[in-house]
Image 1 (tube, rainbow, N blue to C red):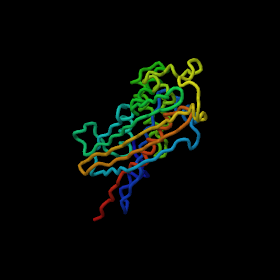
Image 2: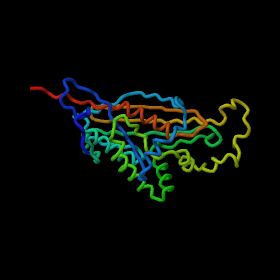
Image 3: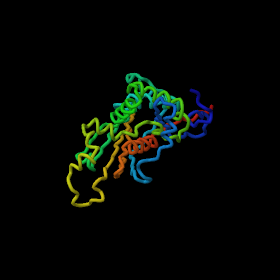
Image 4: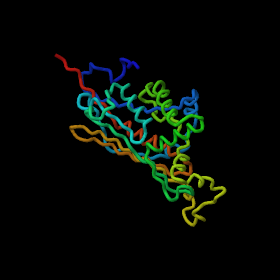
Length: 272
């Protein structure tokens, strides 16, 4: 993969130090040729402005101070591989050996669903697990293994949209449209989705009935950079309150905030 000379990460002749935004485009896609077209054509399940998100903190990566960098997305080998390859394409030197790294960049998170007839007792699943289970569910529908689906997802995406542009949404192309189903299966409440047959387990609404079927969908995301010069953190909370179940969109918004809060500190070229 060749970097163009117009990339802000490749400009070595800047008169002043600059901090370009890191393009953590974790674009994934399944191996089917039409996955990207389907993902781009599908409409959002949640309306515009339905997701509220807030980020606190920033991370600055220094080329001299933090590289080689060890990178890990908790509980998701597919996202870890995509993150590493994307960082490398942006000029970040990484290492698979934690003991050789000058710094460690770790991303983790949780998906929480609460409310409505299905998730009225609440469910909380690590973000990495939710991603892998969703990939596995998509793989089952395409008669392939979860591991092959994840590998194909990384390979296809990193050769296409992931490295195309820093502004490409990293969630674009990832087949996670059935994340709510995957979360239901992982928590043992899959059968509760058919409320038309089972009825609402909560009984009859007595108050605030306009919100009776709505689900609070939250994504908590955390990024931490640990090195000899200390620790830098980013904390993000994204939430939506809707009858439409789309936890994958809430997760995407949370990770977008993480992406926007990580910068690469490019040292200026010294003049003699």
